[in-house]
Amino acid sequence: MNQRQLQIKQMLDVAQEVFLKQLKTVFPEVSEMTIRRDLILLEEMGYAVRTHGGAVSINRFKKAGEDEIEYMIRQSENVDKKAVIAQKAIHLIEKGRSVYLDAGSTVMCLAKLLTDMKGCTFITSAVNTALKLSNTDNSIIILGGTVNPNTVACSGPEAMQMLETMNIDMAVMGASGFSEDRGFSVSSMYDAKLKTRIVEKARKTIMVVDSSKIDRDKAYTFCELKDIDIWVCDTMPEQKVLDKCSENNVLVI
Image (cartoon, rainbow, N blue to C red; front, side, top):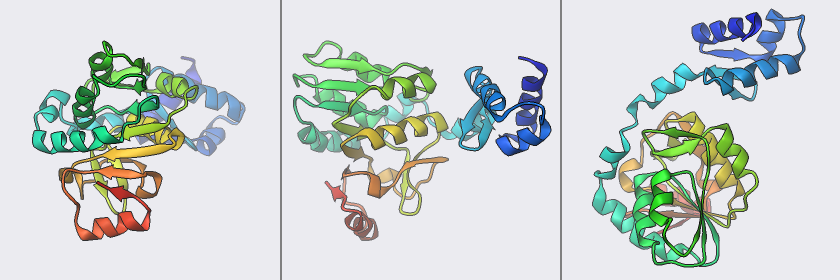
C-alpha cells in the first residue's frame, strides 16, 4: 500500500466508515477514480467493504457477525420445524430448472430430499450442500469466494462476479431473521449483498424461514416481502404477518 492508501485505512480504523466526497477533500490532488481504486484495493486486502458512497471498515462486520451461531449448533436447533419446511418445499422444485439453493441448515434439510431428483442445475454458495448433491444426476455449480465458517458458504467479490453470468429460474433462500418493517435479514454484509443479487436475478423466489425467526432483526436486510413469491414456514404466522404477505402477493405455505 502507498501512503495515501495507508492513511485511508487509518481513517477507516478510527471512524469505521469513509465517504468519497470526504476523501476527495482530504486528497484533492488525486481523481475520484484513483480513490475508488484505493477502496477496491482495501476491499481486496480484506480491510473494507465498499458501499455506494464510500467504504466501511471490515471490523464493523466482524462485530455484527458475533451473534451468528456456528453452523453445526444451528443445524441441531428447531430440527422438527426445518423438516416440516423441507417436506413442503420439495414439491415446489421443478425438474429441469436452474435452481439456486441458499446456505443454511433449513436449505440443507431440503437438499437431503433432493438426492433422487434428476435433470436440474443446482447452484449454491454452500460447500456442504454442493457436496451433498455432488453424486446425484444433476449439474452442481458452486460459487467461489471466501468461506464463512459460521455458514459454511462462499461470498465476496468472486461469488458476485460468478453469479452475474448465471440465469436462475428458482431461488430457495434462507434468512436469520424477519420483521414486517425490515424484511428478511442476516448478520453478514457480504452474505446480504449476495442474497440480494440472487433474489434480483431469480424468476421465482421461495423463502424457507421457520416461525422462530419472525420478529427477529439482524444487521443487514437483503430483501422484503415484495421481492419474494412464496414463503414456506413450519406453521402459519400471525394474522398481521399473513395480511402483510397478502398485500405483497406472497403465497404462504
